[in-house]
Length: 442
Image (cartoon, rainbow, N blue to C red):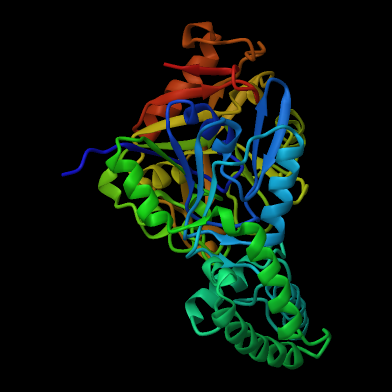
């Protein structure tokens, strides 16, 4: 069997766990960093020498000169957003010559964003007209960022009208695909009330060919590229967008995103088989957050939740929306570790918990008077779960200067140990601040 020369970094909660910092940290010992899912709806923040970078489509490895940063086939790419992001990075002195985009990645187009917004309007109207809310999602309940991600993935499944990055380099193919897609989309828009101007396929085709010219040097068959890198003895680092509890198959459906966010999505999203991955690092915060609607059993709409939000700067990288906050949910964490086959934990934002006299941790759920330690990956079932808490002693000391486990206050160290025991895997990395150096690696 080929040697496992790859590492995966995946989120174990509802996103925003600090994966960007971990990928940036690990990129130093890898040669290639690969995004395998999601789109511009995923935002990774990295702080280097006090300077903050917000990355959406470009893999975090781009901040290391000489590394290959690969956008895999499982990502849906908004060409305008990608080029804007590259332009912004270059203006800040970042070398983007190592950026590569899969010719098989699907394209997010303007009509996908229009469809996203119109569907949300229809959802609002359907809810208003419904006599009962049971089974009917309220407007905005899924938490879409209106960036066209869901419609782009839907078109990928529809196939006939889908457009891939490689098509932007083939005028003879692109025109026909765009014409067919516009036929479908314009009919859809008319059916949704005709509140949008029809899309002109000729204008859109011309725009896409221009974008293709700009993207051309970046576009490659990344499946062969990645296997060539592995054959040459290079080390790959896979960077997941969003997180396990938002996975379209294994998350809190239907309150999920539209892609395979867990480590299980790496194979289909890159063409690299799972046996080449030797290490799966699951990233989790020392508490929980969630953006948008959907159940979150440990949410704290109170002073404790507000304290976590402000200390943790819990506002969306992509949207700027305040995140919902709450105590750590170990039931959900154990489930995510199991699904991903995580070999280790990266525990982030531990410093945010400093100052609490007591810290509550959810260790089980109560459902209709029955206790369970199993996580239901179903949004409607999860709503019925009441958290069962265990209370741990807090720690008042600030820990941003800790660089070894031995530097942590005793109660902070006990909190970490409690999480490790419950999750069944060791915390190999503990983040105590946003900067690269504010990290314990043992």
